[in-house]
Length: 202
Image (cartoon, rainbow, N blue to C red; front, side, top):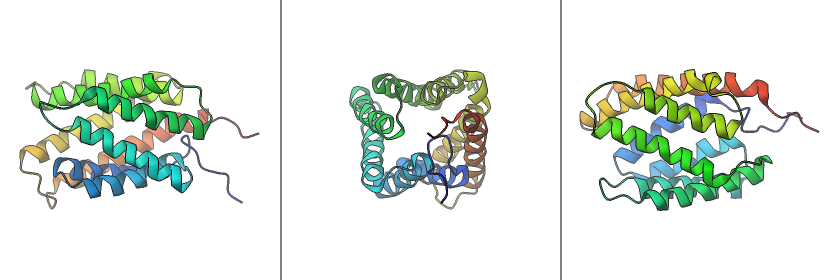
């Protein structure tokens, strides 16, 4: 029988495609699509049993809904919900991480992206890449340098997404093909970085 999947062994194509769909749903306020995509991302990314997968996806949805309004969003509420998500992940995967710290790092990159998307005119993704890498490094227990390529590809995907949003959020826009490709690349690079460090069974 195949070894149980874990957060260190996942399908980067399935997750990359699902995240692209989640971003489409987020910006079009199609929350049912966000939830469906979150179910795929949590199931493929962590291979939790279905009840925990559904609960985790719900936390991801609620965190994003609390973060979404601009400028009157609820970052504290988003962090609280994502703390519950990471506590769920930690219990399922047998991790010792601080769920509050993981949630803080998660929402930190959300903030860096919002600043880059709405408040700056340059194309410097340095701080966004740093925030993404810091979150990956903490959750997976790997050096930030190892996950920098994954963070950079995901940041580039966000830039494509931002252009798509500025152009009107057309679900048939060809930009989404490039966004999806970059997200698959990002998760492929993340898998390359974390799989060798997967805890050994037994």
